[in-house]
Image (cartoon, rainbow, N blue to C red; front, side, top):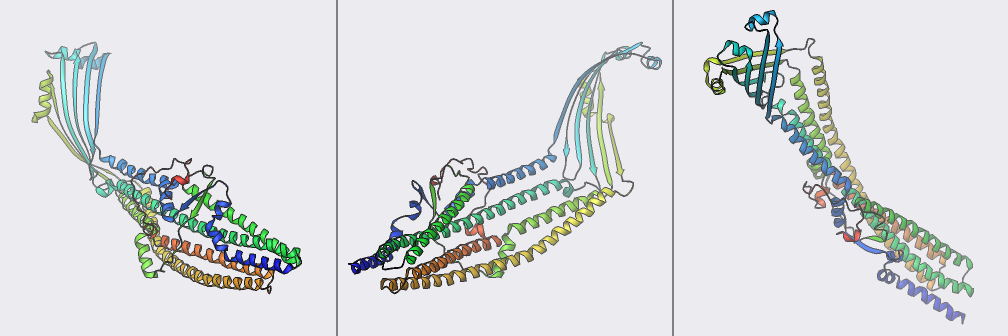
Length: 532
């Protein structure tokens, strides 16, 4: 009778071992661990696209581009002509002193009523000159006019044109367009910073995705082993009851079950943490997705390790950090040229021409202001302003600008070295991780064979449970190293692509600035509604 029980137990162990993979494949272990949960299969490209469209911080960075574009238009507003309109009416009633009495026809008091209207248009031109064209219309009615003329009101109309042009400081398009050009560079900086932010976000997403993949693979592997161990434990309990095995083997099997359950709890917590970070990147609430389980469905593929020369050439062409440094040099160069001009003396050419018509009727006054050559006046002059002590303020600004420009140029040279070293390191890391993946694949295959042989020995009664558990632990350890290396290899690949500025192109992400306001106001939506 005892021999029959022993054979049944051995057969049970054998059946469990043979069908272990079928059990895992037929039933989703991850869903078993979460009652009422919904499975959402996630592809890497789908996840990246949704995060790019929904991430709040990225959307905020994108809006900075729009702000900088408005800043350019704001600076261009200095060339917009301005119209000035004014109108006034005044009444005067004052006593005359002795001198005024003599000059005002011996009148004891002076009375007048004046209506005045003015209109002008003016602005700035690209050379730095300021122009102004104005017209004024004035009607004056006073007791002095009544006393000295045969009419009681005078009309005076004036047309004036003035033009003031700087000849040294502030002259030329480089000076008038200085702030505009800096604003345009700032727009390029905002776009480059957005691209850099986007690359960092994509790299983080790739890292989290493959961490989720590796953690889930380990979870499934531990779950598989736990199920087998529990089946073996049941059989061992039956054998122990009939005294066929020592109690120590039974206790070791129970200890192994507890150990694997603890490992599963830790892996489950890690998956929750990774999923929580992904939900945050998606701008989704944990509460609304508490019953959602992300399943990484993409399998890792091996990539060809690039050459350092071609990778460095890509980085010089595409890397946002280098582009930002180059834009910084452009900004500092513009500031240096502007401050260099501010050291010059302030010499201006001032010109003015105007015509004035004064008549007893408004039509005649207007006609004279437009066409009476004998009443045309003009003036031309130069105005020079030089600081007494050599313009110390401008000289210091120039010195500071020169230092900043030199520093920015040195930063580019330094960046080339840093980038080359970084790419070299990333290539070595990728090569190392791929080599480790190959080695761990071989180790896992070897450990699997050893475990299978040990289980065959146990079927024949020539191995103990302690030996089985030892080989299981070795296999699990090798699998853990394998999945970690797979994750590290994919992360190293992403970081290498980021270092060469090639990451967005590799992921087919179009860096455009349309649809500036992204879908960020959706924290209550569920992940199952997204195209993951």
